[in-house]
Structures are given as C-alpha cells and as structure tokens.
Image (cartoon, rainbow, N blue to C red; front, side, top):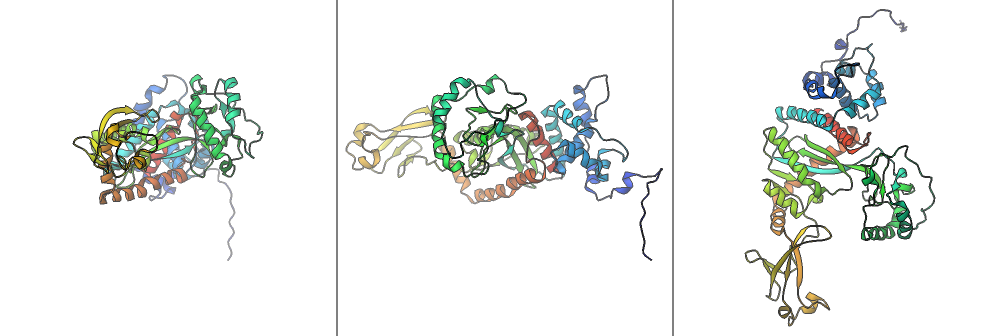
Length: 479
C-alpha cells in the first residue's frame, strides 16, 4: 500500500545531538582530539572583571576554524551555516535550540585578541602534528603568494603633496585608448597616517615609472581588469589605499594589478604540514624576508625538539647575503640563483687563493676594493687591471670596447657562497629537493586559497591579515 508522510511539529521532543552525529564524523573526531583550554589563561588579560559575559574564547576559535574548514570568509554566512549543521553545533558545544552569537561578536573578538594569541594556537596545533610523527623537521620548503586585500583599486589616492604631484604625473603618464574619465570611488574614512600618504618616490624613480608606463601602455589595455581606473598606471610610490593603507599594489604576469598582501609559507616536506606562515607587505621582495622567516621557523622547530638541516626555496629568495646567512645558521640552501649570476667575465679563470682573475691571454686582473652597489645595496668586489696590462693586448677591442683603456669589472662579494649553493642545486640531491618543493609547498598554497578561506583577506590591516593566515593554516593542519 502506498505510504504518505504527514509532518506535524511536536510540542515536546527528546533530542540529543550526540545520538545524531556519527562516530566517524569529522567534527566529532576533531572535538575528541582538539583541546583549547589553554586559551582561558592565555586570553584572560584581555577581559575586564565586570560587565556582561563575552563569547567563550574556545568557542570563538572553534567558530573561526569552522569558517576556514568550510571555506567561508563571511562571518554572516558562517553563523547561518553553523545553525543548519548538527555536527558543527555538536563541535561548538551548542544545543539545537540554543541561539548562536551575532556575526559582529566574531568580528569584534578577532580584533580584541592580538596576533600572538593566534600564533600560540598555531604552535599548539603544530605540536599535535609533531606528536603524531607527521613532522620530520630536517627539510623545509618556503614559498610566497599574493592574497587579495579587502580594498578596491578604484579608491586609490595620490600621495601628498598632491599639488606638486598632479602636474608631474600629467607629464609622465602614458595616454592610451583606455585612458578616459572614470568616476572616483571615495573611501568613507581614511585609515592611513601621514607617513603612508607621503610621497616616497624620488625624481629618478618617478622617471622610471614613466618609462614603464610607456612600455606597458598598449599591453595593459588588453589585460583582464585594465578598464578599472586603479588597475592602470599606478605605483606604490605615488598611490596609497585609504581603505587599507597596509595593502600594496602588486601584479603577476598576465593578471590585473590588485591590492594584495604577501603570504610567506613554510611547509615540512615529510607530510606537507605547515610549520610557519606570516603576512607581509606585497611590495617587498622574497629575498628580503628570508632571514626573518628563518629565525622564526628555526626557533619554533627547536622548541618542538626538531633539527632543521635543508632550506628549499625558489629563485625569488636568491641572494648572496641569504646564502651567507643560511650558512651561519648551519643550514644547507637549495635555492637556484638568478640567471644574471656569472661569477665573473666569460672565459676568465678565478684564482681563489690569490683572489684574482686570469684573462684568456694569461694576464692577471687583481682585486682592488669592496664597495656597495648604489642600485641594489649589495656588497661587491671590484677587479681592475692597469692600463699597461691591456694596452698591447690583441683582444683589446673585443674585451674593452672602443673607449675603455683597462679591464674593470665587479663580482658579488658572496661568490664563494653562490658557488657552494650552485653545486648543491645541480647535484642529484638538489634535483630531488626541487621536486619536493614543487610537490609540497605549491599544492598547499593552492589548497589554502581555493578550499581554506584564504582567497581573500576579509579584514583590514596587516595585523588582522596575519590572523587570517594563521587561522587558515591551523585549519589545514587539523584537517
């Protein structure tokens, strides 16, 4: 006989979440292993002694973790999503008829706690991974990726003094077919300070911006997003975001210019566990940030009783200073050098003991001085031959050119460190390390941005961005 279901709500009902959530459910298993009670002591100083009770700090962090585990970057959507999931309610410790906190409570509590609290939770979860034997420690792969900031390019403002810059920018700006009037979106309130609104570009740097604009004027019109006002000829030297002054303009080949933060990520190659993550300004270079990453990561691994041996990264982290720094820290670097590194002129032989070069004609080019390159600030060594050495050389025209009378060239001060690193990179172990980096840290970044709520920073400021990245990494390690 055909059945027909009639629904009628009961006035009284006996219901227990623990009976409805299966033993194999992810959130039930997570509830059994995740102990965040240390947060009560860690966050006590941020609360007063009187007044209305706030959200439980343990519950707050569980809400945040659910958001990143479910790939939800909106606090409103997070609360709505949690209210419809029995397993999440059980994980949070809320009954089915218990009202969840307002979404604004999550936002305000996130701002209340400093970044050190989020980092402490990250370290605690990393300890769980170490206890499970998932972290070897000896090889760490480091990489970076831009993460979109919570600010629009259309709200960019010129740095002061505007009256001086306006005429100058009219002169240097490249006029293209897309260069037309676009309504300017005024920010509701300017969160920047005086230093962030001040011009940091010299006349020489502004001239370089003008040169780049002329080269890019046609190509930029064909890029995605080129029609937006802010995506065109802008620079961190001349523009700032009043909405989020810590966000910086950055661009990837083939992509539109955006306001981003830079995420620096370290991954243990044994089981892809994230061992360190931090937000940086997007206009900084990877090789400038490596020492800070290494110091922080080495300290964390040492506290976990792990010994770090190999540092693996891509060419963006290459510099002689970094190679020397890693050697002083007792680490082996597997970082491919930039293509511009040669170690000296072609066909010249280096004599390491006497620190000089021998040219193809057998003439000695001695070392003369150490100096700092004014463009990059890097230390270099100058080698220079006397005029009488080169005057009668049959290769003079080809070697010196038309006007030079003596051979002079410079080589990085850290040539020995470069050569030792290159030898490691080209060895069988180096090729193995390259494959390890490509198969560990790069897929982890993809997972965080696509499935762990890090496709966009939903907060303002670099300190808040740092919290977002730590929460995303915590969720990844737990899962």
